Picture 1: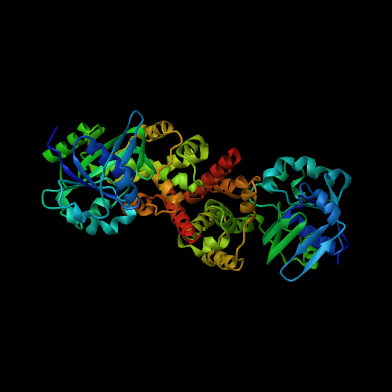
Picture 2: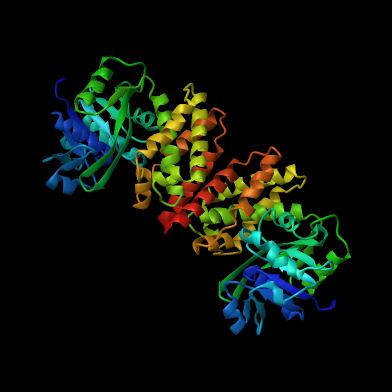
Length: 310
Length: 310
């Protein structure tokens, strides 16, 4: 393998915990900054449950803030996008000119926001097409053999991009190189927008209930078509087959609850702007009409706001 | 007053019970066909609670089916639109050539369906802009001094239309003549579609929560604008002031739950097609794009379907 990396994982929930532990098991020196599970993980470590194996990282190197970690080779940012206002305090202590910052967050606008704090050239994006949930403190389940696409925020790929993809692959993560993060992100939103959105709007149901009901399924497809229209306006083509495949893939997920639904049901912040608001604004900027997304966005915003009052 | 009428009320829930009792109190000979509240009302009669008075109709002439009533001067049809497949068996025993049939139901398509069973010339529509709920068996509350618009299904008005409006007025009901039922119905839908729909989609909230939240309110307005566009395509103009007035009126309703929401929460049939599906189809037929309504319609259909499975 390439030489072991010093890695810091910021936001050690489902995604951060999972990929951090996969890299730790592969021999990298991984440090986690966690908030809610800090005490538990400090004592018990992490447990990762996949479809075909279970392993533990114990003890896990876990911290309440990044200052004790110091500069690293790779920062994995897996915060919820609603916490992006903390980027500066969380990321800058870990970064010098050779540090790569890999954003593995949901939705649009994260890499751009990060570029306000650290040089754009150090930023990469990692887009996860997976079903990973934190099922209890320190315990993370991966329900579906998924994949990660890694690409550069600025310019075309270089050797380091390939090296990072290789590092992930060698750690047992199915990983691909994305030559356009933007194209890959619009594709990911073809799933996130209908399924993260409708499972909440439909009153807290699983993805299975969305694809099993004709009306929900039709609405999901209409939403995908608006996302595709916006993607096309930005120069990224998405095929009919790809849209249909989103339903096929979802059938394999059985009773999956997307992260947004879990957050919503638990009364936590929901990534409304990153997943729904920002794509709507970007599509609208290009003159694309996205009324089904607008309906969903306004409904979700209202649902979250009225839940917080309750 | 005009001579007392023999009246049959079909579907003696909130609307049928209220207007039937108002006519009974004014001296008309009113017979109710009730289903769920039959036994209770037979024993205890009806109680009507309005903002400024409470009265009882006891004993009430209440029946399980129309056959014992025989032919009447006026049939008031206040069934839920989801029960329209029972029109024939419920209405025809009451009707001869001089009988007027006044449809006081929610949504679109009721008068047309009735015209499959009795001569179109005998049909009138009565559109209620009110907040009336059945709060317990036989007990009906009227929260808002509302109004009824009565118009002919076919052709222009005639003396009988004026007589019927007068009959309602003399019974203490604020009642107006509508020279176009279709125009009045589209206007009524400017309220029903956003408020009946969003109170369900928003997870079972009151109208107050819709108008107090910026996102819900914006979505309500977008829905109203689509309804207006469809109305305009059918030759009925609706002003900005009228749309804004829907919010003002709703503020006066305080914590009101529309009938559709009450039905939904109680696990009963919801008038999805009459209130949402039929206006969507009629707008679409005229080439009007109604994507916000389409989103709401599909979401509600899915919500009702998945509720029935639960």
